[in-house]
Image (cartoon, rainbow, N blue to C red; front, side, top):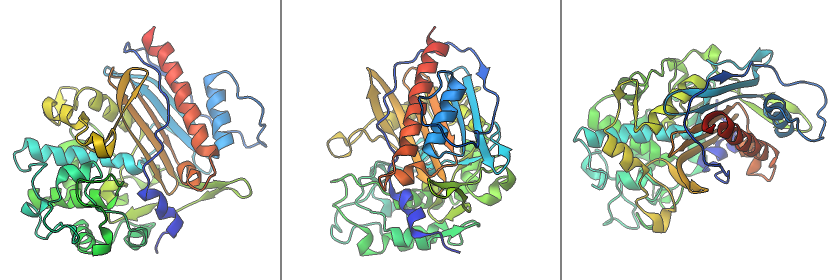
Length: 403
């Protein structure tokens, strides 16, 4: 069964990046907020409560967000965990609830690609034709090579064709098209290419499928197996995974859409043949560990998954004149003098945010909400609520971590 076209629209969109985060510091008190389902009584549009739990619950009600898990972390540990609302009907969000990360998944794929550089198997600036058994060229510019660095920064000239992504998507099951087949077939269609490679920024989910196929071709290893061996297991992210078959499905938060008229509508979990762009499922505990590892140069608990120099290279912006602040699978933002690595995610019943500050303080928000999809149609209440929640968490980080 194929997902509705509109559900796939969000997969081609870069998530919102207009949040202002204050400078944070790095001492480590620990706090945890008790989970509680959002009140089901009619919403009172008065001012939000002053206390953190009440404020977040109010924003969730205002924004049509069913469930939320959030955390503030430092390089040393987790300073605060919040669990609010419902993972599914009558089931509160818990620390081990899994959320689909949507486009935050691209940061995992980026690490797996750069690990190939560390292993001496890949030159990020070499033509992909040298590694893949098929041509990766824009037919309009056949003499211009496409490189992994271009795909990682969305500057390859490859573009998303939403109807094709829809046909490569399934509802309720894992994808039924191999990653290698999807990649080969996708790059072979002239209409899937646009600008001259290296000349223009154009956000592209399909490009990360090509990167996943690149990992498979070079290593002769399944992308999911490679992810487990080189990233998820070393960082202690046990229970996270790319496919429904890789995780405990009963622990995945039900995706929801919301409308003022109908309220919440449960949706099916999705599968995508281009899964390295969008399909990672992880809990707030997993993401707290991941954020800490990123903040520590991709080392955690004495285990290093990428050489520190290459972790630093992932922060560098290679094409500022055409791709703004896009680094390798991340976006770099400077807020009030502090730079941080950032990615957001928007998909069918999932809206997520990850900020990793240069001071080591991270803010993570995971939801089973269609907030960002709605925002693309002018319905801003969900996106605005998430922005307010992140700003409030930033304020809490000032109090928890800086003092």
